[in-house]
Image (tube, rainbow, N blue to C red; front, side, top):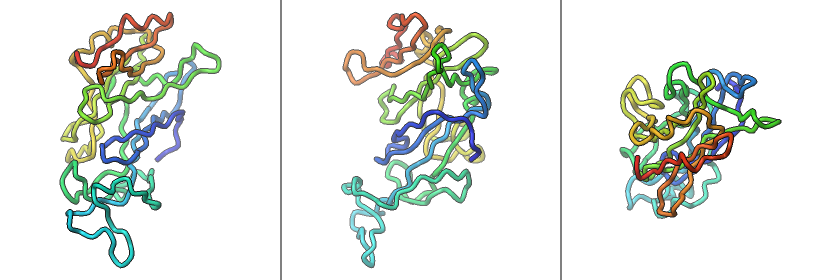
Amino acid sequence: MPLFYSLHCNSPVIDRDGTIDMMFTTCKSVDSEGIGSDCFINIIYNQQLGLCSSSTESEVKNDVRVCRQPNNLCTPDDHFKFDLQDSPDNDVCELDPLYDPLMLLQAFSHFAISSLLPENSSLLVTDTTYDPPIPLSIRLGDANLDGFLDFLVISASGDDRTPYLVYSTPCAPGVVGCNPSDGSGRRGWRVADIGTISLKNVKDARGVTFLDMDEDVSYFSRPFFPDFNWGANALQSRGL
């Protein structure tokens, strides 16, 4: 993977397999207004000891732990790793209860943020109204309560700064973040369209985050404006 400009690294569980992954943005450059160019979102999946193929399979063979039962998912694996090589050789064949048994799973995935944002826009990387500028990270939260983390980013186009909500979705042909040749992969991404008018009407956001405002286990996505009058434009997740 080429060395690009990167400021933040998140530690989410992207594929809901119980192990912590890595997710971060990279850009080739960032201009004086905090706007990145040639920006990518990178996901590195945690490579851990796989699950056993059946409830009767032994976890230990020849005094070596070769797999673990689902009830032992939290058993530490001292040999876990994150592999940042962008190569098909980096994929891992393992049992995954959320997908098909024994399939080739991505260990590293990255895609251009431009594939999600409107044409001629890019990612807002820093808030330059502060000195020094404040880095803006991907904001993660399960907006639609499907068990998979979604994310929020801010698109920059001209003088507009607009938040976008992006849903995690199963991989399929044509889905961003999945294999372009056959649609395979762990998770894909799509921009939320329904119920996001309030977000798209925002043109001067400096930051955005998820908050469970009324403690009903659903999220609001709230953009931060220069005058901090962000409450009036909250977007309630159950209305999406």
